Amino acid sequence: MYSIANAPCSWGVDDPKNPFLPPWETVLAEAREAGYHSIELGPWGYLPSDATTLARALDHHGLSLVAGTLFDDLVSESHFGTMVELTHAICANLQKVPIAQADGPKTPPWLVIIDFGDAERARCAGQSARAKRLPEADWQRMVKHISELSRIAWREYGVRPVIHPHAGGFIEFGDEIDRIAQAIPAATAGLCLDTGHLYYAGLDPVQWLRKYADRIDYLHFKDVNKTVYEAAIAGQQDFFSACAAGVMCPLGTGDVDYPGVKALLEELNWRGWITIEQERDPRDVAGSLHDVTASLHYLRSVGF
Image 1 (cartoon, rainbow, N blue to C red):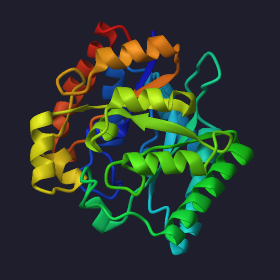
Image 2 (image 1 turned 45 degrees about the vertical axis):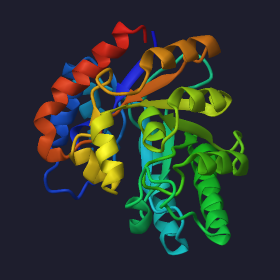
Image 3 (image 1 turned 180 degrees about the vertical axis):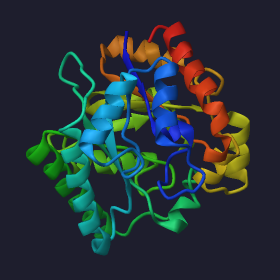
């Protein structure tokens, strides 16, 4: 069996300043009730940032952490100092709390690195023809920033960095995934590919998992409601508006081919951690426990 975790975004937790977020205690309690033993840290400042308090809470609920996340503007020079501080804070925290265990070379914790923060690009999520690409100088600056954040995470804390292509960010579409994989070697950072974000970018998840199998340290699984997705693309919605409309759905109820993903991972003999996510509006949090439970049961039912 594969090791499977969840993440606070399944409870609508993406922006820690959102006034509608559920209490973090609810997220931990429901994750455990749903059958998970591990969870991601989520956005910095949502779960307790004091490591002693967080460790006590995780122990209380029988949970461990698999990853922390940088989800922010990785392009701007003016913002980079903040990203450095955040990397130190997250990785230092991960050194002091219960961490998920794994056999083999793909071992938690990870620092999941996601570019997101340009409003114009965010409005073009999933719309490759409309989405502006970064000018060369900006791209090279982003590569430099990701490389330095990765160095800090690994060299100073032993936390493995992984780059996560994400809808609405500057690493989303096939040309950008190829480019970042060429620019940043595996020794610097691995990849965390996400079936839902690949689908959202118009890519076949099975094909792209195969293409970068030797670079994937960690996986995110989502499912996508095809009808809502097509309406979002036709209406040129931003990603989080589409999430509020229900574009992400419990695994097995959408259009991602999970039996195909399972067959590929078996063929490749890929073993590692998988985190289920289902971005939603936190005002719809009442459905989270049902959905994260259903997603885990579905994955187990098809052999994960």
